[in-house]
Length: 350
Image (cartoon, rainbow, N blue to C red; front, side):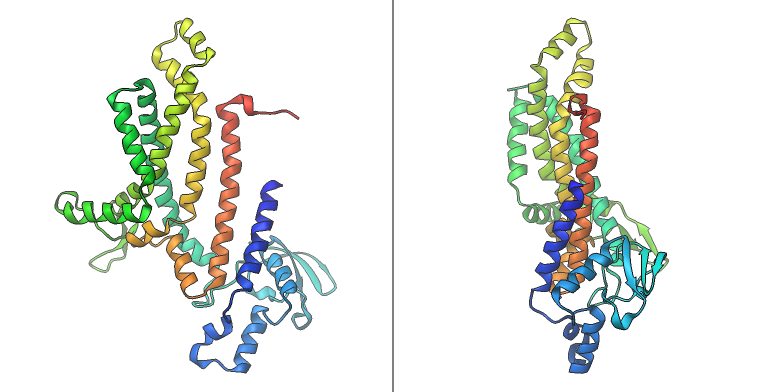
């Protein structure tokens, strides 16, 4: 219910924000061919000839899996005609039908493609990049954090602290440029990495595309630096706190091995704040690492959003923001479930 209220608030904010901004979609779609009659036809088709409140109700109707359709389009309260998307009719009462469908995010002003199709093309690129970067940050960050906690105040701990501070303070756009220049230009003869590239590369012989995983290395490394630095310090602090608890002393008094005490007892109980931070970082990375994607020419959500803003293609921006918001809510729910698995003490019976 909380997630639903968050989504409703975001939908409301996004709709009214982008509908009060200057710019006429009809003129942008028609270009130099714009005339008053054509503009009126397109605005009627987009529903922009109706009051803003009715436009908002129509937008909610398009987004809802359960929608109301008026079969008489000339008098339709919900301005978008049902032929805009596929649906299944559940109930008919007079000229009004209750239908079930996938959420409809409208169409791009520029390309006339469905926004859902544009997102479906771009999101897998960002998802792969974000997940690989987060996996790299989690594995390396947790490992370094545990090592630093077990070797507190040694040269390993101090060196890691300096590198972590540097990683947290390094801006993403600067890190992207620096890493691309160093590994794909200066050291290109040894690394054989490309400065630009995507997950799929067009075959030189025109035989389609092939998976090129080496193009993923540099952007994932760049994107994972900041969460890596944060997770390292967070794991270290959580481990130090867990190792000082009474149940750790009890486990050692029972004769359990040092490895089992660290892994099964201390680390598991120290992972709650790490999971919180990791889920937040993952949501941020999925929202689109704009600068990283631009530097490495990675065709993901960040590039789509910036390009759409540059051309005033508001349906694409609105759809992308709402899609990201749904992901954030789902990630938070999954995080709560992981809490209960890691630490049964957070399971509250009501």
